[in-house]
Image (tube, rainbow, N blue to C red; front, side, top):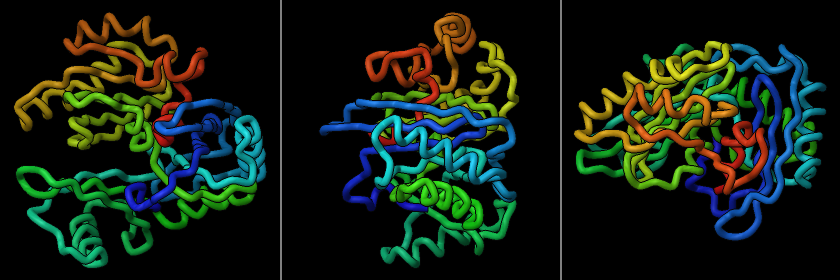
Length: 292
């Protein structure tokens, strides 16, 4: 996968593929201001996100949806940030005392640690990693995807007339919308995956990915998903999550009071109305975060 930190100029168009549709956004200015969004629904079965199986089942239908979404934001024929489903990419956090200064040697060390923890052959996978210095050593965020799966998505973008210049999994892309410096938790729900991440001062300290239920979420369901991570973070870092940022739920206001009561954490939308208006903004967390 493409490493975001090594890219000097990020594309100003982002496009996300999910099992349910394709969403695109365009930004302008510095810092980026979202000026256009557009989405296109996909019929069931066109895209079936998975770590180690074919993901794109109907390439012409996916190409058409990407073309439509990009046309809606003026992005046809341009380089884009390609945002992939979380269930197609394995995100893992590793701790090291140190890593070799040469990038190739550091990658070899990371691959060695990952080799026995993945459900596919790591030699057939693309790896991206970001090493963050902490008081205890290095905290390494890794994203791994089978090359065959990555090629399916990249080909879908190329066939739609654009270039996937940067590739990110959805939840890591969405974290670009997090501005808080105090400990906060991202809860990102989709039909395929529920992702939970804890960030403090720009560092990703915890990440969990759970299989999505496909059912309409309830406050109790969301509380059950995040409770183990809340406890783990408090036990291991000696502080509590101060805010819960939720993405992927329409009408969050209906759930927020009950969710706050069950978790004792303030709850709000990750992408608020100050970023973009409309009832469908919960669809755009990945593309908006990728551009901010």
